Length: 239
Image 1: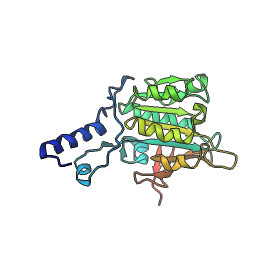
Image 2: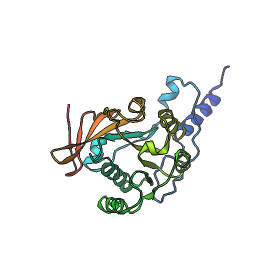
Image 3: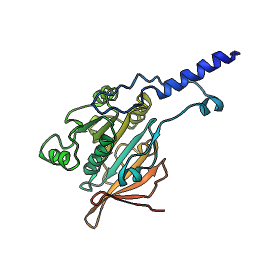
Image 4: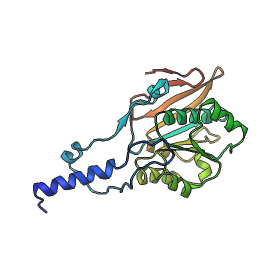
């Protein structure tokens, strides 16, 4: 089918709008993101070159650790041994995104909403984020339409599988997902190895000489092997 120049321009603009619709972060808990259709069409290289994908940097040493992020289908997988500090680090991330103007919904499915979480809210100044101690996959899907960032501790409590992880990223490409994954007895990520490959970045939280350290195991943003000391809030570049 031959398109004239005006129809080609309309087609390219519609694709741009589909990808970029409603990406402005909101701080009031109700994002104004529009409905983003799932693109199934094949693009020409020239069409792709006309599109602008939202990239952004976050402040502080933690922002430097994460690198320059691309919002489209951004998903962060956190893993680590029991007691290493995964929940602490998830609240540090929630604080970082919240202070940068993103609306946050935090699913505290492991610890509930008791005194420990109250302490973490105070420690990481997360007074403006929304919290819940209940939720399954269908509730996350509903909240993904309202919030810029969804944090879940932990993914296993959603009773979702590894395929659901990728489906969420595709269905809500402008919602940022931060999921904690527990480790199995053999030390692998619970939920399947595909999670590590499907995520935008995988961060392993460890304890070293009493300090909580976040190690960037996988990243699409140029910070693989970098470390972030959660206790002293310092990033160390590693090769």
